[in-house]
Length: 354
Figure 1 (tube, rainbow, N blue to C red):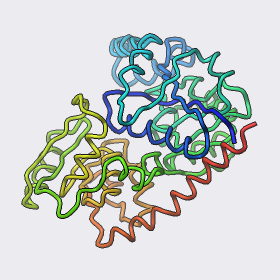
Figure 2 (figure 1 turned 90 degrees about the vertical axis):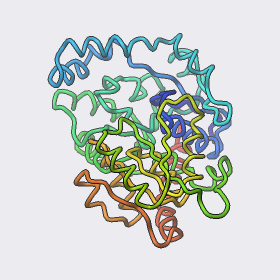
Figure 3 (figure 1 turned 180 degrees about the vertical axis):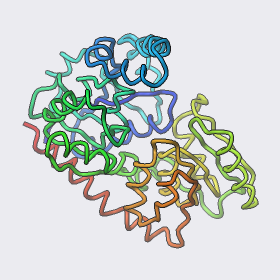
């Protein structure tokens, strides 16, 4: 088995789900037998934005060039120096170990390179950066785990860029079925849809960090939203009160440890959220959860609902839906084959590194 691996992903210290996801992937790679695992903070640079035109063109079409320039300026504030500062404030309870060297140094220091998960291939977020296709890493060592495009299709002018980038990756897995279709259309390759790292880790790992509360849940429902609209917030609060529960809020970016989200879900009697990761933790802690889908988020929910055997009609229509199975054991049992297949992909891909 290889001795070291580097992960290229989105790193957002203001996003609980992102931090938990980053930690979960590192932990799973370590449990696969890799002694040293580090995450590279990759902030797409100006040459990426202008080099393929993706960011400028998408933004200009939607909201005008003036906003494009403003957002690029904000994105570029995260320099390599910023990455070092981010690594110094990582949470001690769920440490995500960072690599602060250059990409050139990383290419010779690590045995394997993994891109994912999250929307690392979303051109609107990442400028179709060549780094997110592991272009800096030696061939034969490139893996994508649960990578997401964030869209069901790509702009025509980016298809060649993506086809070239995807072709250079040795083992590819994606988070949503739409991603698998994009890869097939661009490369002719059939690639698996795998579980998000938080679900791959499974209840056992999370319960060891945040034990489920013994006895009946407290008389409160947790409302957790990322950019939650006032309408969705009203629905969440009304649904919570309809169960005779008090409403508790956990604002994203509140300065708390990412595990505060897991702890809040563990202690709640009910969860209402538009966050995929809050939904995932509600399932793993066996809490009834009302999901309020955000635009463009349906694919990741639908993939897991399919696995769980839950009707996805409301999700597909963008309507709130409730997940409250009569038998949590059965729901968890349905997840196990997908977890095993996802784990098999990761183990096999790492084992094939040259």
